[in-house]
Every structure is written in C-alpha cells, then in structure tokens.
Image (tube, rainbow, N blue to C red; front, side):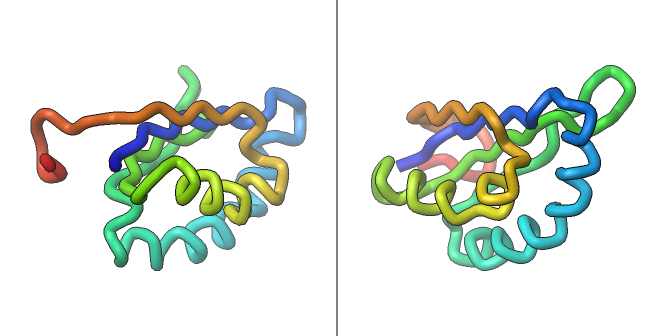
Amino acid sequence: MQFLVMAKDGSDEEALERRKRTRSSHLASIGPLVDSGNVLVGGAILDDAGDMIGSMLLVDFPDRTGVDAWLAADPYVTGGVWREIEVTPFRTAVGAWQP
C-alpha cells in the first residue's frame, strides 16, 4: 500500500544545521529501502530561499505499521530533524509507480 509522507523540520535556529549533520545517516539508512522498493520517491521541501525545511516521500509498505516502524528508526526522527510528520494513504494515478 502506498503512503504519502510529509515531514516538517523544526523551526528553531539550529534546524537546518541539525538536518545537515544528520543527512548522510538518513540517506545511508534509506538506501536499502529504495533498493527494496519501499521508498519510491523522496526529496527535500524547500523554503523560498532554497533551504531545506522538510521532506516528502512516496513509500510502499504492506500497511501503516510498516511505515511507522521505518519512521521510528529513521535518523531524521531519532536525530530530531523531523518534528511534524503526516502519513496519508495514497494511490498513484500516473507515473512510474502505478499499481
């Protein structure tokens, strides 16, 4: 089942630096999920200045429990980067990941 994940970073003064510090760990941990087909597409949400302020991911897990388990272990969560996370069931209508 596909899910749209919208994750917003903290808005404190250290938020961008915290993201930059944690980014390599996050990317390393998400690589196997891309390879297995769990993460279909993802990237940074930017502000008007082009700074990263959050993330958007389209993921495919058997159920919400799988999404929650991945999120609980992701370095952006454990490192305090993502402060607000919204997970919504999603169905691709066009593009490379049609059911």
